[in-house]
Length: 170
Image (tube, one colour):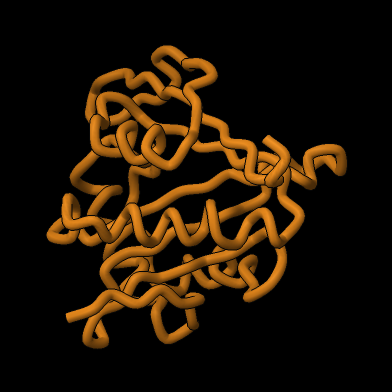
C-alpha cells in the first residue's frame, strides 16, 4: 500500500504515544525514561498546527500510522523564533523502508521554508547510524557533540547535533 503524509490529528494520538513509548522503553534515542499515557501527551500534541513553524506530520498506510515527524520551538527566547528542533519516530517495523526519508523530507524540505523557518536543528543520541544517515541524506550538517549528556539504562550517552538551512537561501 502507498504511504501518505498528512498533518497529525487528535485521533492519531494513541498510535503516536504507542510508537514513542517503544523508544522510551527499549532504546536510548529519547532520554525520556517513563512511558507516557495518552492523556500525558495532549498538551504536547496541542502545540502543533497545520500552518506555521510547529508541525506534526504522520505517515500513514491503509489507516495505520507508520511514524511521525515534528518541528518544535528551539528555545523560548524571541531571537530563536526562526529556528526549530525537528525529530522523527517510526514504528520499528517501518525502519529501513524509505518511510523516514519521505516523512522527514516532507517536513524539512517541503514545509519549513514556507513557514519562514531559517534553520532546523536535530539531536541524535549515539550510536544511531540510521538517524545519522537520514539527517546527512537530507542535507543536515553535523555541528557538534554533547558528550555523556544523557543517562539511561545505567549508561551515559553522547548526542550529536545537526543543522540545516531551510530558508532557501543556503
